Amino acid sequence: MIFEAMTVGSYLSNCYIVGSETTMEAAVIDPGADFKKIDDKLKELDLIPKIIILTHAHGDHIGAVKELTDKYNLKIYIHKDDAEVLKDGNANFSKMITGKSTSIIPDFELNDGDEITLGDLKFEIIHTPGHTKGGICIKVGNIMMTGDTLFNKSIGRTDFPGGSFEDIISSIKNKIFKYDDDIVIYPGHNSPSTIKSEKLGNPFVN
Ligand SMILES: [Zn+2]
Ligand SMILES: [Zn+2]
Image 1 (cartoon, rainbow, N blue to C red):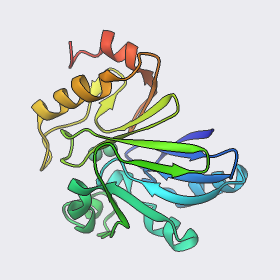
Image 2: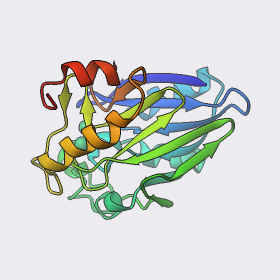
Image 3: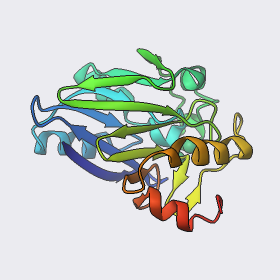
């Protein structure tokens, strides 16, 4: 597996590139901004981007989607409960964040437990509502990208429309913490952690 993390945009969102070493196909997770930075990294790694998977619909995670899809004709995946928000430039906060309203129509709407195959990679979709209704975590190999659900020793905000503190705590405890302790989590903002480290040290779930 080829894996690259980069921080993009003024909200310091994490964008992840996950590539298959057998086919050199890649998924871009949360291209939040900085199209050129992401595109340069794809070229540097010799990867052929095929899909975009969004952990949720917020503007700080979707800012480079249009430019990437225009260039590479990528397929866009998002959980079905965030699909309507993604289409609405006000609800997805793109206007507030970039000054320009962006409406994105996804190609595929995901459900909990779905799997997306790309080369030798399998992306497992875990529905984790709480930050938004359709927030997901994406597990591939021994890593999990947790979007704005679970951060290193913190959790995502729950005061936006569709947010719920009860739901986010339940998502973390009952869905994410079911996985092995040694899985490395890569959140939507800030630095990585592990499931074990969050079980022991995250103040919101202890
Ligand atoms: Zn968010
Ligand atoms: Zn965010």
